[in-house]
Length: 347
Image 1 (spheres, rainbow, N blue to C red):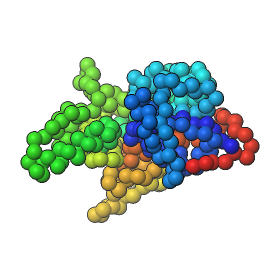
Image 2: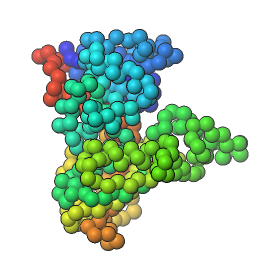
Image 3: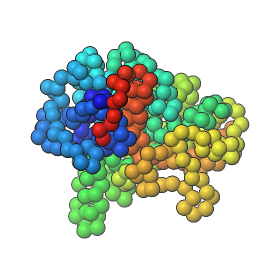
Image 4: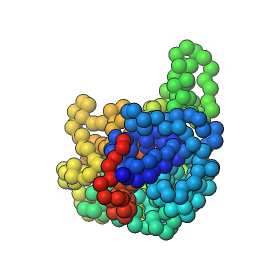
């Protein structure tokens, strides 16, 4: 016997990854339900190798008696259902942007700020950070603990899967159109993505930043340290899965590249592959389907006092979304939720 778990937005990219990740990690489940909008009712989604779940209607679902909901249905949907589920006693781990900056909702990356989960009791909601923020703060954490970060300047190279299945389809169809000389059609993204890069993710704000860049700044402060200054440029690139980041860091104290390399090697969730030779680094293609945050190109920056540069790569659907949500659920269950003795996993 284990927990009763709901997966909300189960037909989307992240929802499917959540189901797969729960099964792969043998999360202790007594009952599981797949939820989505009314138009998805009647569809089926896979859970593990053998199980298929019918999709049920989120709008009419009663969360009473359910323990945990892993949620990725879009911010507007989360705004409506998550407070209702929380009031009905289900702890919602929400992957959307809706609750991340709510002061009553913890924003959690378990390797970085696991203790913050305790704040879930205020609203029965825990927020999963933005995918680009997650991989960056995992890499920053051991370095910040050692030398205290003053400032981060980051440029991201974000795959189209971060914008959903429609953006993935758009990259595929535009790439084909280029080769067969068909017209380039764009629907999801603001400009052609095939054989191009787009320095625009989410909407523009008054100061010229995009919302994605703002998220990286405010979420890093909430998760890691409010004193850290962050400046981001977020770019969509023609890659299907996997985000990469060029991260430049200014510390309060000197930190040599060799020591940083060893600190990162000791950090849970991080793999360092940093050889100053051909293929001595990780790219998005190589991280797709993997759970870790990969760090390469660790080097000192002589243009700023106490500066380092890193190359950080991770699967945005795994650690950037589904895996981090499941890890929060694991920590929540281990630290705060009771489970009947002898509980076993069904995945």
